[in-house]
Every structure is written in structure tokens, then in C-alpha cells.
Length: 121
Image (tube, rainbow, N blue to C red; front, top):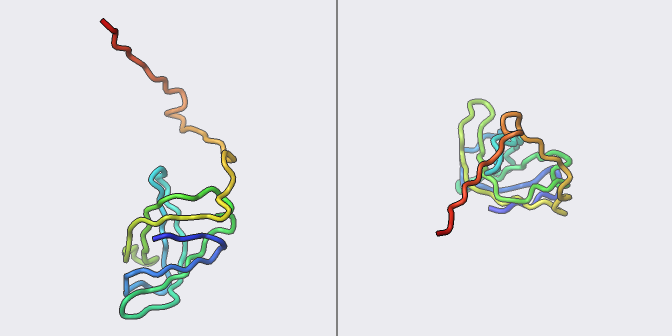
């Protein structure tokens, strides 16, 4: 599935037919342990699929968030998962590069590597 984020409200369709009227659309990057939880509202449902409208943060489309994410569609009451999989997120214009400084966690800040060389005989 591919989703182009151009604003704060984006619409996708999923194969689940029992999606609740409101819930959470959870995005998780392969590089991050912190999921991005976004609220959604179901706008259409029939015997084959459901269509939901996802509310993104205002500055999401301006950040460099292009990539493949793991997504799940969950209920907000009992955390039941209705659909999951991979989604490709495309932001427009793609955001600026190298704007956010990387700050390593305290336990890895002063980690040094050891390199062993194999002698050539």
C-alpha cells in the first residue's frame, strides 16, 4: 500500500470489514522503537472493504518521513488489531535533510569499537 501525505487528513481503504467508527492507525518504522499513533475515523464500510480517514500532525508532510513503515489499524477501546502490513509513506516535498541532530542514548555515547587485523603471511 502507498500513501502520499499532502495534508493533515488522508484517506485509505483496507480489506477489513469490521473496522470501528474511530480508532488508531499505528505507524512503526523499522529503525524506531517508538510507534506513531494517529487517530482515524471510518468514513465508508461495505461487505468488501472499509475506508478510513487518518488525521496526521500538521508538520508531518514537511518532515523527511519518506519510507516503508509497518502499519496496524487498531481499536481505541480494547486495542484489537483489524489489519496490519507494510505501507510506503511519501511526503511532499519530502522534507529537508540533516535538520535534526542525532543524539545517542547515554549507554552508547562513549562506546568504542575494537578492530582486529588478520596478518598476511
